[in-house]
Length: 241
Image (cartoon, rainbow, N blue to C red; front, side, top):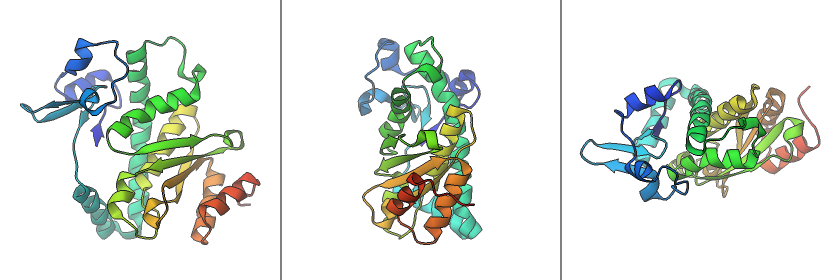
């Protein structure tokens, strides 16, 4: 779990008590820093864990994730998924701003983000999540021109913790993707998990896109459609009327 600033580097520095990663200080131009021993700095004297991008991290157990989800479900019932999704979406929008800040600080780019190679930008954004234990991913943007895209997440922290419960559980991931991509393209996007490791699948699959695409997928999913069926319908241009 990582805490980042939504507004300024000053706020982030206050959060981590002005601590600078010692390896980054020693090698300011080092970019291959995603090995565990490089990306994180464990400060035993203060009990702090700070990553390469100067964000404070907190280690959590699977019991914490389980307790958080079950606690929400106990308090608000079926609305827990919506609340978790909205938390993720707010996180994604904030992290999009934070990401652009550290990307330019790290690599000293001069051209705007929208003129960079999109695949490169996306991999740069997700690498820290992989290092922090959120899993690997792959993005299918072949249908981007039609208003939607698919994202596969491997080894989801949430789904791995809950196990085979027979339903999608990675609402916070869906929100995170919706928030980040909304900020990236400056358009309101939504997301839904249409396949989950917690349903006995090999990996989690998310649909990110315009509201009508996601609404259609939500309807089909509730009607019992599988991810491959939803993909086929969307590829054929079937949406709700």
